[in-house]
Amino acid sequence: MRRVPMVLLVSLALTLMSAVVLAQGAKEKAAPAKSAMQTFLIESPHSVEECMAVMDEVSKTKSLASWDWGCMAGNHTAYRIVKAKDEAAALAMVPENVRAKAHAYQVGKMTPAMLATAHKEHM
Image 1 (cartoon, rainbow, N blue to C red):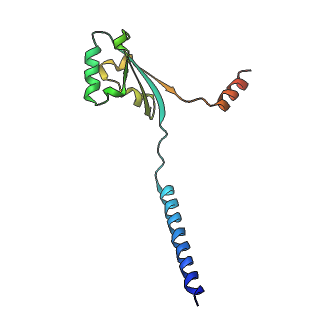
Image 2: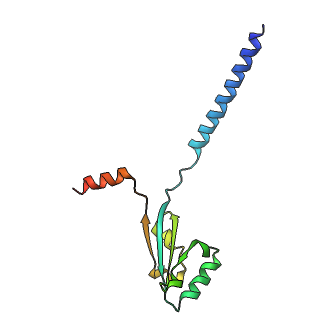
Image 3: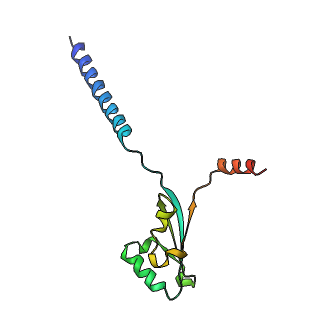
């Protein structure tokens, strides 16, 4: 008689676990596919005369610390690595008054396997 309650308890536990797993799978399938974000290096040159205005504009967007500035070394260029949908979206992060001079380069990591493939393709 003791086996019947134990078997029922184990069956109930397995049923609940299965329901949770199925519910999680349904959530993952129902979630809309996110567009693939790409990594870009933004290079935004500006003149000595534009420097303070560019920094002020960036500061207004609360992203001043996200940029690396070469200005203190005489290289009036701001650099930032961002995740964006495309090049245009990356460039939209540059203040409008200097956006025309800016460049956004798609960048990525290189694995040893990718390097080996690249060598084979260039032989």
